[in-house]
Length: 93
Image 1 (cartoon, rainbow, N blue to C red):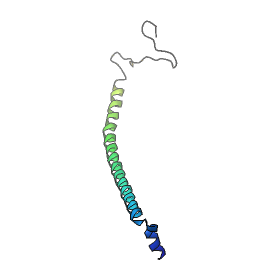
Image 2: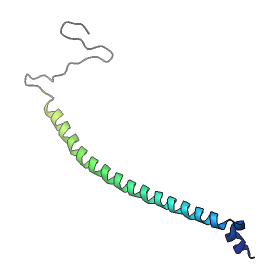
Image 3: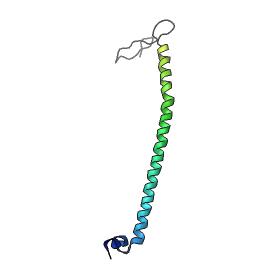
């Protein structure tokens, strides 16, 4: 027997070894195909989300800019020093 005949015979266990290799190859290729398909799908989903989120960000910042001043002329926010608790009208936290 030549080297290749001996190798492919797998010491008499070729009928078990080669189908196991074939099944493993099929499973690995299947996993690759499923993973690549999921990646493409996830990228499309992310692009759709980004397309819908970005215009909303601009709308929100425009709304915030237009609401900076209240009708009575003040900014609508009270200045509170960092670290100090905000208090109500009665002076209690």
